[in-house]
Image (cartoon, rainbow, N blue to C red; front, side, top):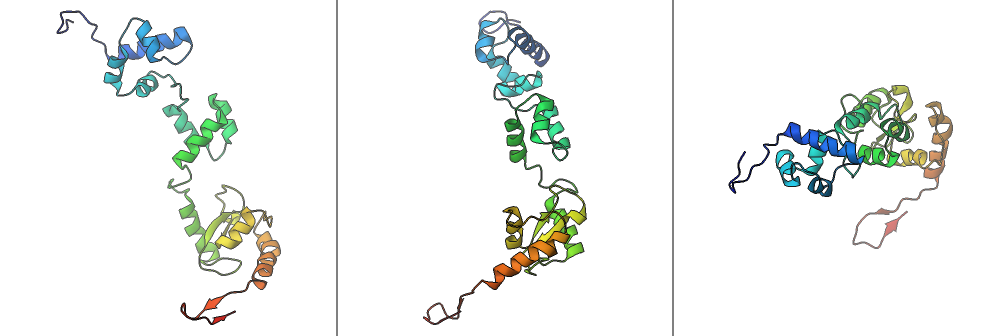
Length: 212
């Protein structure tokens, strides 16, 4: 194929480029860089980017992990399918990565949000049908869903609590291992808190009279 300058060039296709990148990877044992491409005969980095859009996309299309340790599509799918049953460490060992990479992707992807039939919002609706709309301990109407057993999909492992009662558990001021502990441990603790609370009721913002 002759260019405008009268020189001959190879009509590279995406298939040929992927084979070229994989051959560099096999020869060097690492993810190809611009420097590798410039030193090894073949398509230029500009040609590769023109075909794939970005260098990262070209590497991933060739089945090569970029230097930034980005996840491949099949690895992302594996995480989405196993993040509930496996720990970050287990997933990292399975994929040959560090647990930090798995944790970063999981946090950025917000796996716990808006998943079919498994989101906290759906769990909360189901929990409110079973345990009521108000906090099970103090009866406040502002509530959150608490998983007594982390990530459990069993409704017997859930509780509907207000932010205060919820934070008492999450801060481990009271250890709740099952629903019975809500009454025997959490309720007495919350009662002791509210017994000592004093509320300031301001009748008029412009008035100096404050009743307690």
